Length: 128
Image 1 (cartoon, rainbow, N blue to C red):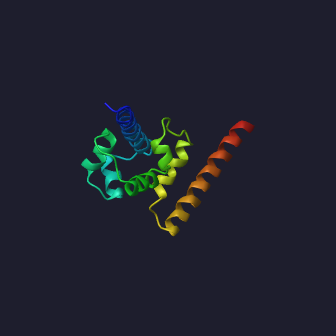
Image 2 (image 1 turned 90 degrees about the vertical axis):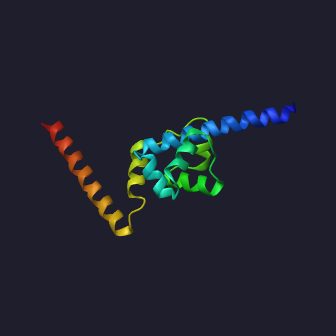
Image 3 (image 1 turned 90 degrees about the horizontal axis):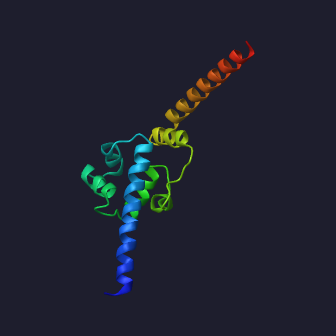
């Protein structure tokens, strides 16, 4: 057996395993189902399931699209440790990513007003 081929087989398994776990992890972190992500990706749910189970590897173009839909990078999907960014920011980004500019503005404006209101409410409780 060629030592290089053994290394490549081990490397490929590890890569598939990391990629599959990271796709599933990031999808779940954003609160998306396989059906939802598959629809946005333009593939069958079974195809996405095979990616997440490590049964097949997406093409580079598909991998790039997955990373965009999951608000992460291709590098993070291939990394050994998932990125621990602010989960709330990633979730909110995923929610509004497909909205048009006017609707995004509406969401941002209302979210800011709600946060301002709750901050003031908390401040008032501390004064009492």
